[in-house]
Length: 62
Image 1: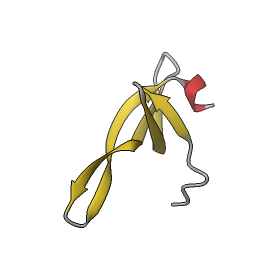
Image 2: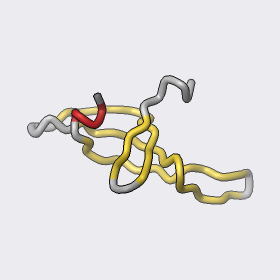
Image 3: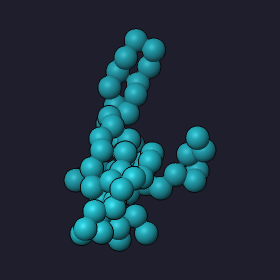
Image 4: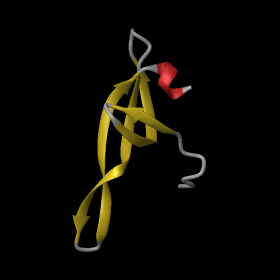
């Protein structure tokens, strides 16, 4: 995936790339799959970003 077109947002004091978006809840929040741009896990074949899924306010996605 082209990283130049991926959105980067700030969430809980960290910066995350938005990998995918999903459902929208009653409060207007969007369920997102996020990958950290600052925190990584070292593996034998290199580093991989910490990933989370969370509900994000729609205004943060704009």
